Image 1 (cartoon, rainbow, N blue to C red):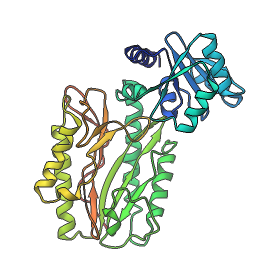
Image 2 (image 1 turned 90 degrees about the vertical axis):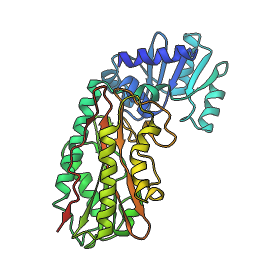
Image 3 (image 1 turned 180 degrees about the horizontal axis):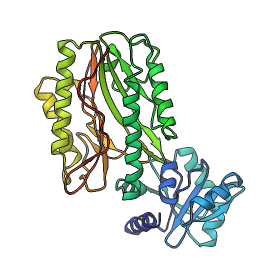
Length: 355
């Protein structure tokens, strides 16, 4: 945590910021280690102060050795007192998180303090994972892989997508996950053409493509795995689009490297899918950053200008989606490294025929 504070203060100095108020839960956790639901984190150039209430004071003291923990009866009043004690007249805030109502409250309560909007200060640091974070993320990926192996014995015609999602969630928790990283996607049959087809009451049927997109939230970090299987023998069209998606994904994993932009990485997969005539059926980005939340910087997309650097963890998840027919997506989590990527997820990618 100390190194993260150092890097945040360097970013604050570069932007001429005296103090930073951190309210976004994942940013607060990343900088302080605090996992509670309520708290203001005030970072200055000489101190980090966590303001929280009675429910979390003991917890915060244990979790946040690099912070001074203040038990606050009223968070804004305590924040105002801390700013006054330090004679701070300018306060940066997370402009992409603070809504207008909260901004007005801050402005009215903190009279005499100028509020300065700041964007992506913590998020830009979170892009780079250290070894302690990678140890956790490897375990989160392992939980997802083990859960995929488990679900193969559960899938069959006659059960609902919701049943599958519940079993995925339950098994990940049995393996140590706190919960799923996001709302689990189970999309079967023609619904598999929905890239974000969250599990419904639809019953799995023979002949269905079944796309499952899920991940484990483990010790504050996410994994994100997608595999598509088929119930029974695939028809020619199903096998065709599966093979194209797999080809594009494997090619990307073989060729993505440090120094590329997100745009260049996205093109590795997109060009192959387009060459096979399905460019219009791949409408989302190739991937995204992964960490304390399931979608973070950088973006691997047609607008992804950030250069990929060592320590970034990203997903690689091309797909083809054909309305009224079905779709296929294959996704892995990778770590960018100088000598080549590390693939965190290891589930088989051959087209599995269930039943």
